[in-house]
Image: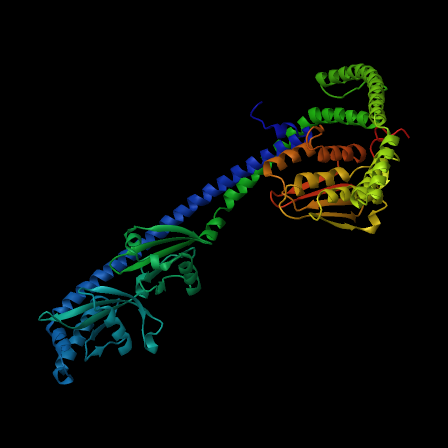
Length: 600
């Protein structure tokens, strides 16, 4: 099936089997969780609707009380005794009859509306209130400076010991006479009385409270700690009393263990907030939880039974067949002693018989292929050795030695020490490359590389500084002959030769455990990013193309062939900032193949 990912198809059949089992259990678990979530959502929705009903009832009562307070304010503002009291400029104008009339009027109003706790009269002379001090009344007066009608001043607590913990919803209205503001009237309503007709039933799972513009709160049926938690979780409180927020009918949000809903009450300029405890909802889902757990248990048992049957009838024979194949591979057997007898269905049994026949045929073909391959390898090896010997014999070492000695003698006779030095270095390099073993110590390789550098310094006088730092414990480690010279040549011709000004070539070796690292670093022109990527690709390729970058690629190929693919060359370079070549090889002579061309 094309819809099944290739990674899954490549897994072992046992792993596929258990993955399918886990997926089935996971899907079952997800469905159960979704069922519980939907049930919880429905119960929460019902609780929210119930809380919204109570919140709406409270909002209606507050609106009614607000309208009554506004009506009482209008009644008092047109009362002659109120006007006379607030117009008084000194205490002589305030008569006993006016005070008695206002007290009687206050008593009648409170008898008609028991939720009204106080009616206060305030002007520049008078501060008459049974609940608040002069300072509180002055503060309330300041908030009324821009008001022209009866407005809500929010929730306040009394200033005296007897009413210090009693919350009041305060309304204020300015009083006028002859179009001049003469004072203010403040009506205070007892908030605790609003909860009496509503909370007759146990509403432990819900919390109702109101909050004014100054963020003063009053909780109808919960503790102050919970109120603080709910208010703190609503977010930026300053955004609640914006036009966009106040125009919203209601807003819902989830806060920790509570589902919170708040609604603006325009008449009282405050918010009614309800919070439903989600933990209590969870306790109501006990029956549904038990039902889901039972369904999950029954389904899991059924799935396990089905998968056990599939495992025994299909998975076990296939695993047995796979283990037999691995056993044959591990023992390098070419012929099995007896035919495979797989316990399973008919098709699996036939697979065992066919495999026995196929293995016998493959064994015969492998024998023929190995014999032909050995013959071919020996022929190619002899051909390579012959080609190398032919190349070596093309140069007559004695002729070259004699020629170099002649050049050296002429240089000595004519006092040209530079030519003498170059001739000596050339002689060393020639003898080193043609004669001797193919495996040398690192010290010998360093000596011949320094001889090559003597020649290059003669070519570039005072342009190349050579810095060496070879750890003593690395000098006697055996390495392949002519390992460093091609890389040093690369550093000079591709890096330092094209650099403006003087160059620096740094050679060092370190021993890290069983790994020998040899570093050749220059501060030349570096390598461009595109060319560096191409070289990295060639270094990583199992096919060695030595037509380009022969020093790097050939040396890397020699390291791979002699030591294994885990060893080789690491290349780092930045254009305009030099190049660093690191050779990584074993500290001992560990070769995977004999050296090609070594006749010893």
